[in-house]
Image (cartoon, rainbow over all chains, first blue to last red; front, side, top):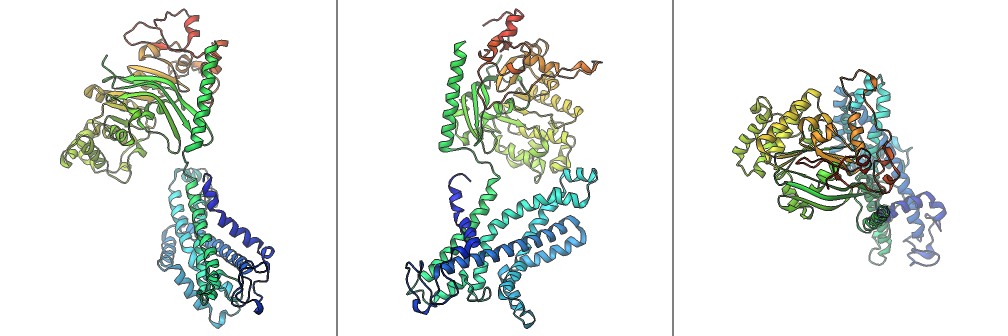
Length: 299
Length: 335
C-alpha cells in the first residue's frame, strides 16, 4: 500500500462518494424523458449526451451508481451476517448440526450463485410475491445466492481457532461460550470475511448489472448500469458512447474493488523498504555514523 | 588452534523498516574453528541471532538489510555471494538447529523422508542410501527405534525427540559449521542436558565447528570453549569459557553472571538484577552502549567508545571492552 496502489482505489472511493451524494450531483432527473433532445451529443446542458428517450446520460450514470451501491451494501451486509452466523454456529457447535449445515452450504456453493439468483427471481415472479418490488426481489435473491461463501469461510476460521491453546485457557478460566465466541473467535472471523467482502463487492456490482441486463433486476425507469447497457445496445453503431460509458463505469468499479480486497490482504504482509526511501534511510544512517565518529574522536 | 571455518570481521548490520532504522550489530567480529564451540551470549534483542545467521541471508521477512564487513566461510566472503550460492552454502556448509523444534519440522511430512531428502541433496546419496543414512542419523541423535520413528509425523514425537530429529536433520548434509540458535530454550531441564550432551558428542566425533547462540549460562558452561558476550550489537567481552565465566571483567558480564540464580544460596538476595533496560538501538549513541546501566560509569563512557583490550596471556585472548574496570583494578593489558 505504498504510494501508487492508493490511486487505484480511487474509482471505488469515487463510486461510494457518488452513490452517497447522488441527489446533489445529478443535473437532471434521470427518469425524465426529453423527446426534443433524443440521442443528443455531449453539451453544456447534457454533459454526456442523452439516451434514446432523451434522458440525461450523466445523471443516469450517477443515479446508477447509487442504485448499485445501495443494492450492493444491502446484499453484502445481509449475506455477511447470514453467512457468519450460520458458518460460525456450525463450526462452534460441531457434531450433527455442523454436518447438516455444511451439507446445505456445500449445495449452495455447488451451484453458480447467478443461477441461484435467477431461479429465485423466477420463484418470486409468482403472484403471491407481487407485493415485493423487483428491486427487493433482486436483493433477496442475490443475498440467498451469496451467503454460502461467507458461511464456509467463517466455519473454517472457527474450527481452526477452536484448536488454539488460548481457547482452552479461556475455558479453564471459566469463560462462557458466548464470551469465547464474541471476544476470541469472532474477531478472527470478521477479519477474514471483511477482507473477502471488500473484493467481493466488485463481483456483486457486476452481478447486479448482469441481472438488470437480463431484465430480471432493477426495473426501468430506475437508472442502472446494466439497464443502460441494454438500452444502448440497439444504438451501438451510431452512438457507441451509450454502451461505452456505463461499461467503463462498471469495469472501473469492479477492478477497483478487486484491488481493494487485494490491498487489504497484502497489508498484513510487511513490505521491505526499497528504492529511494531505503537510499534516504541509508544516507541518514551514514550521516549519524559520521557524527558519532566525530564525537568519539574528540575525546 | 586450527584455522577458522567461519570468520566474521567488523560486521555491521543495519535493519530498515518503514518506521525505524535499527543498528542490530555494530562492528562485531568472531570466528570459529573446526572442533570448537563458540557460545554467543546476550539478552533478547542483543543481536546474537542476527549476527550469526544474518551473513547467511537468514533475516526476518519484510525488513531491508544492510550488511557490511566480511564473513569468510568455505574460502569465500559469503557477503558477496549471490542468493543461490548462499542457498547452496546453507544446509550444506552450515547446519542450523532452531529454537522451536515443533515448528521447524514440516507437520505434513514424515520425519524420516525430511531427513532423507536433505541427505540426498547435499551428501549426494541415492534414495536407498539416503534412507539408510536418515535412519542412522536418527539413531545417532539418540532416538530409540529409529526404523519406527522414520515413518512418524512430527506431532507423534515429544519436544526432546523432535529436537534430536532437528539435530539429525542439520547433520544430514554433513555441515562444517553447526549453528544452534537457542537449541534448548523450548525444552525441559532434563532434556536440555541430554540435548547439550548430544551436540557435544557429535561435535567431538565429527570435528565440526559449533556456534551456540544462547542466554543460558548453564549451557555455556557445559558446551562452550570460547564465549562472546554481546550487548546491544557490540561485543562486551570475549575469551575462553573459563576466563569469562570465572573471571569476568566487563561490568555487563559481571552483572549477567550475578543475575544467574544459584540454588545453593540460602538468602533471597542471592541474585542481583541489572537495573534499567537495553538501549534503543535505533539511535547511534556515541560511547559505551552499557553506560546508562553501569554502576562503574564515568563521564568518558558516554563519549568514548571502548576498544576491545586483551587482558590475559592465554593462547586464547581474553578481551574486554571496558577501560574503566581495567584502569580501576590495575589489570595489565597486552595489546
